[in-house]
Length: 161
Image (tube, rainbow, N blue to C red; front, top):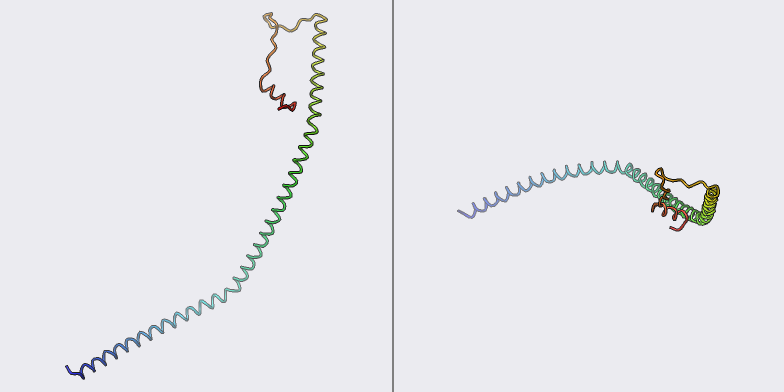
């Protein structure tokens, strides 16, 4: 083959490659143009929705501030209630500490009066010679023993427990 034929074939191959590259460049530019047009329309939609989004964010921030203020007010209220409950507890303990000795003295006085009345009635029964109650079979009555929880209950009531 001659040099001329090789040169012509080379020119034809280069021309074909250049034409293919030109067609690919035109197709790429057309695709870029469509992509840019789509991006422009999306940007226009975003710009159109931006004021509404800004209003919604402002409203959200306002509501978030209100919620924060409400929580702060609630925390202050809980602290005030805590202080009031501590004061009530102190007053209750002081009141109970003042009242308990009075109740104890009244209970002791009442028990002593009741014990004295029972002694007097026993002495009166002995003096007039009325026998104490007996069982139906004639044996003398047995005094029942106090239950454990009764003794503990009395100890708690009297302030010893």
